[in-house]
Structures are given as C-alpha cells and as structure tokens.
Length: 144
Image (cartoon, rainbow, N blue to C red):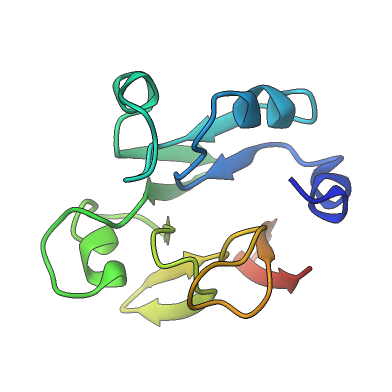
C-alpha cells in the first residue's frame, strides 16, 4: 500500500475495501489504522473469499452502503453487476475495473475509488473517501 494512501486513512472511522486484497496482510495493515469492512475480489485466494464473501451492506450514521467487488452479478458492466446486489442503499462501493468512478444511479451513488496501485486501464493509483455530512454522503476520489 502506498504511504500516501495509508496516511490519508488515518483518522477514518471505517475503511471499506472492495476486494482484490490478494494477500491477507493488507487487511492487517489497514486494521492498524481503523476498523475494516472488506469483500473478496476475483484475485483473492479461497480463504479470503470464504472469510469475506463477495457482497455486504454496512450501516453508517443512518446510511446504508453496499460493498461488492463487481465481478459477479446481473449486468454487462462492472457497475451494473455491483449495483445488482443491493436494494435500498445510499451508496455502492465497488472495485474490479480498478478505474475510478463516481456517478448517481437513481438515488444511489455508485463509487469505485480505483486501486492504490493503479491497474491495466487506470493510468494512476487512486483511493476514495466517503464523507458523511448532514445533507448526505459525499464521495471523493484522490489520485496518488
């Protein structure tokens, strides 16, 4: 994990990871900063898939946030597959494509923070922060 991303997470109430941890050590590294909720991705070993599953819902300050990797589900695109796992959520955080994405789909924010190490289709590494504000959630993407 890049140091700049780890530093940005300091002071966070919660860290969400949308899969492709690849090694369990990443979870331990993040848990030293803040509590972590994670799902497995298609590049994760079977023990992480069994431990984490591919989708879950997190309730935070009255908001419901869906967390899915996005490689399985109904739909042709990663965002469609990620959204297909959830109903009645304020935000869906997903990964798989490693391409940063933030767009409204109806009343739901679809949010892919990208990947801290970049990817085949992403020119730079990135991470995201979701801010819980009095008037809703604000999701921001930060390049590394």
